[in-house]
Each structure stands twice: as structure tokens, then as C-alpha cells.
Length: 562
Image (cartoon, rainbow, N blue to C red; front, side, top):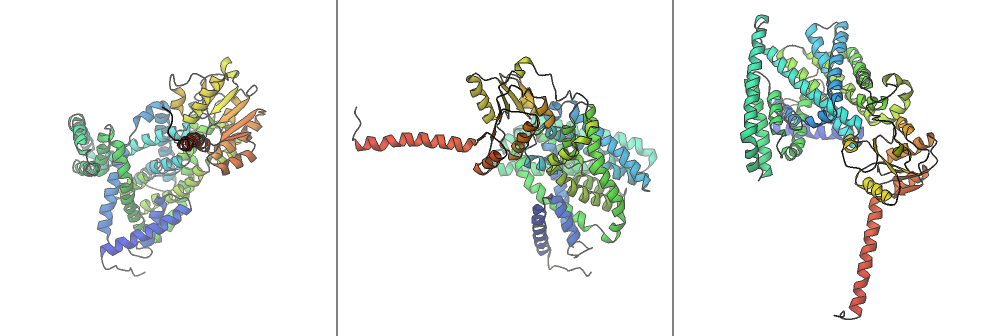
């Protein structure tokens, strides 16, 4: 096909953005991440299809800026607190999954006839999962604070750290002129890296925080400095023999301990996503559909391994560590895809001459397949678990001690009310019930909230209202009420039949957002449905009307008596 040439770069960019918006809207309707849409746009406008892309230098520059900002935001939001609060599971699961996926992926690649270097790149690319996609999906499902959500975010952070270390190593290898100088090159990289990090540490200690205090008077200037700092350290990283990704990542880490990281991160997310659009478009445009057909068979093999093998690896590790099969399954699904870092790693290998364009096409094709498929797997994780639960017993110990901190005590067994959800509304219900003489057993899926010392003067368990195994462990025989202050309709619709399956004969009260959800929950068997905002609004109006009624009467009677 003869490529269509636009009159100028600006018009080409305008058409490119319009196409991206249209394809992105279609992707949104299909509930697919925009990464998939943007790669498809690149293929569509690239030389293999319409041939519209000619401003390669401009697109490449914007793509590099997007990658630098991506790593900067990762460093900026590097929350080591999550790793600490999750204990060893984040490190064990993260490192264990990276190791086993790399080893098995390497063996599969060798069996498919790849050379050692290519097999290593493909294997490592299979290990990384998309933090951006997973956090977005978990946030949409309100599962970020669930135990499996926290564990997933914990080992995604571990993966992010590993990918930065891999990039440092690859750049050092790329700079090596021969095998004899490999040791010296590695030592030189170590020295440069140590000095670079030390210099950043000194700036963090003495300069960055006071400087940000001054710049924070103008949020626009604060964000401008953050971008400049990310790009500048990225450029320094390139000159030191690392990469712009490593430099930008360290720039983010240097600002992560300041009180302005949330402001900076929030402002930069949209800019990061906009610039990453050009990376994925450029990636798609470089794919040669004529040769991509030969990669379909190996791409399907690797995709099947990622979609099935990666979750199994996580489930095995978490099962050995004492977590329930449900927690392991839900956390394992989050690694059933490769990430934007896998594509960046492949692009780095291509630029260093370690892999060819066909291998890059293979990695991209695996990304398209696994990201598309795993999105639906995560969105429908709970129904999927219900179907597969009977076959998942091998991934759980007889006693899941990580989630069963102790057996039910005598105080917990005499509970009159089991309360799910200990947020503001739920805690208020618990206090009022206790004030009226009821014994309350609290349940929440936020491990920090459950373990917080002194937060509750009644027994509290970690648990999930949708987990049938957990419901079976509750002392439901003498419970008069089960109350759910959780507003998610899907959670309450799962809780109601779950209680019936356990033979519970008491009353159930659940919470709804609105009257439509309330009617559906009543049809599902709820004895009471609470609508907090509606009840609070009615009470407020009653109070206002009561006050307002007095004013006209006083006015009709003339001046009030002194």
C-alpha cells in the first residue's frame, strides 16, 4: 500500500490523536485497557496497514519522555510500607514468581528453538505484570484494600524494583566491549551507580525538601520542576551508562519521601498516560504484519503459560505460606499478563542489538493476548473462582494459618451480631449495638484495620463476605443478626446465599447505595436494607423542618417576649 503523506507533522499528529480517541472509545466499551487500543492504533496507522506515520522522530521523542515519566511516577509512588505490612508474602511471592516464571519461560523458549540470549529476554519479559492495569482494575472493583489486593500490589512493587535492576544490568552488558572486560565494566557500573545514588541521597537530605517548600507556593511550578528533575536525572543516567529509565526512577524515589509526592503524582498521571500513548503507537507501527504471522504459534504457547502458569506459581507460593486458596487465586490472577515494562524491556534489548524485530513482535503479541484475556479474568474473578474452587484444594493447607490467626474464643462464640465492614458507618453501628448490650463480632477485609491496636473494644476478624470458607468458620449458631455495612451490591448478593448455604436461620441486614439496589437485595432475601445517605438526609430534613416551623409562628405572634 502506498503510504498517505500528510502536509505537515501537526496535521499528522492531529489525525493520529483522533484515531487513538476513536479506537480508545471502542476499547473502553469492550472493557479493555487502553494499552491494547494504542498498540492497535500503531498497527493501523503504521506501514503494515494505512502507512500514515512518517513523523517517527517526533513520536520517538514523545515516547521516550513518556517512558521516563512512567518510571518517575513508579519511583514516586514506591510505597515500601505495603511490602513491610504484608510481611514476607510480598517479597516471597514477588521474587518467587519472577524466578520460576523466568526459569520455566527460558526452558519453553529453548524448546521452541530460540538461542540463549533471545530465550532469556523472552523469559524475563514474561515475569512482569502491569502495575497500572492491575491497580486500575482493583480500584474499579474496590479491592485495593482487600488482602489479595494488598498482596498483589506488594509483589507488583517487587517486580518494579526487579525490572529496574534488570535494565541496569542490560545497559551495563550493552556497554561491554568484550567478554574479557565484563568484570571491569560491572565494577565500573557499580561504582558509578553508588556515587549517583549517594549524590541523590545528599540532595534529598539537604536540598530537595527545602527547595520543594519554596516551589510549592505555585503548584504549576512544582509540577514543572518535577518533570524537569525526572528528565534531567534520566539524561544523567544515560551519560553514566545506565539508562533514562533508571535515572527517572531514582528521580521519583528521591521525591517519594517528601510531603508533595501525592500532589506531583496526581498531576503527572494524565501527562504520563498521554505520552505513553506515543510509545505504544510507535511500538505498534514498528510491527511487520508480514512476519508477525510466524510468531502466532509461539505467542499462543507463551500466552497460555502466562495466563495459567503465572497464577499457579503464585497460588503454590501463597498456599505454602498458609493463605487460603481463594486469596491465592485472586492474587494469582493479577500476574496473568505481561506489562508495559515487558515491552519497554524488549525495546531496550532491540536497541542494544540483543534481540531482533521478530522477537520484539513476539513479545508484543504475547502482551496483546495476555492483557486482553487477563482483564476479563480479573473483572470476573469471583464467578471464575466459584467455578474452579472444587479443584483448587491442592493449593491450600488444611489450616490456612495466615488468615486464621486463632480459633474462635468464648467471647467471639457468644456474639449476638456479626458485623461485616468496619468503616465509618460500620463502626458507628457497632458502637450503638454495644451501647444497647449486644455482643458484636466485627469482620473486615482490610488487614491494617483489623490489626490496628486499640481500634476496637470488641473482637475483630479478617475476612471477606464473599468467601464461603470464611463464612463456614463463623459461630453462626447463636447469632441473631448478620449486618453488612458494605455498600457494594455484588458483595451483599454473594453474602445472602452464602449464609443460607451455611444453614444460618437468623436475620440479615445489608446496605445499599439507592432504592433500586435495596429492592434487588430485598428480593434476594435481606430482612432489612439500610440506605445510609437517604436515612441521614431524611433525618436532616426532619430536623430542619422542625426548626423552620417555629420561625413563622414566632413571626405571626409579633416580637418574642423578652
